[in-house]
Image 1 (cartoon, rainbow, N blue to C red):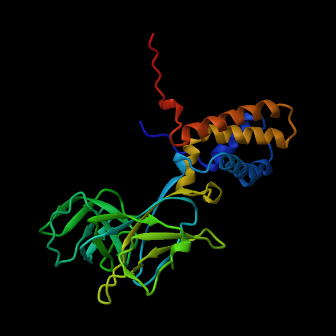
Image 2 (cartoon, rainbow, N blue to C red):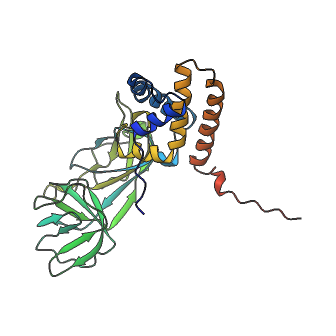
Image 3 (cartoon, rainbow, N blue to C red):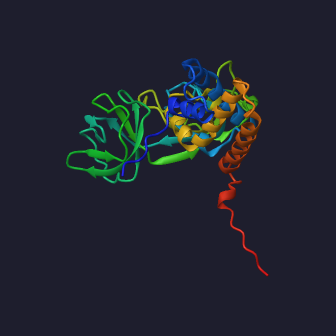
Length: 297
């Protein structure tokens, strides 16, 4: 049997209004629920907790030789980790397809299965996948997932063979004791603020050599800012599925409140109860659904 269709913003808000008993209400009510009430529900969640399992996100980036400052993802909220990825097997691909990449003709490496391959520049830059099969005679590597953008003959790749977690350090220590610029493989990162969503500085400044301009790979794990997550994004679609009942109950309650329906008090209590229960489930270390209790007499 096929998997159920993921709920959409329209499905969530329509169902919430129907459960409130206003299924034939004007379209303006549906518009208000999508423009205002869903945002209020997101804010209610965000007020109670900002580090929830479902808000865990990962992004990938590639450093540039001689550049130390990089922007956080647009939906960044708080740090988990930044991992530097390096590798000695690099080259320019000959071709690519949805789940394959053909390595350079000069490639001699063959022990590649299980390793990750990252596109450093050219078509599909900053994508990463794991190699699940490799044919040495054709240099074709099969990867575990579909490329968002298929690599081609302009794609410069790196097979990752080393991971290093960068140490988070207060930015005021960035220039402490420095007597000259330092370049090379980064070991630290310094979070800094700006007027938007923040940036971080890598130290030492990423630099291989004047002749090797390939960058390092960066895997950035973080908590997304629920208030900045696009309502049509993949993450938001996942949240609609995981928190479907909560969103529907929230729209129901806020619809009754907006229309001054006397049922709003009862529905508000249920909404708050559902909200608190979800926070308990989603917070790391306090998932009561996994708690086992034994009684010894």
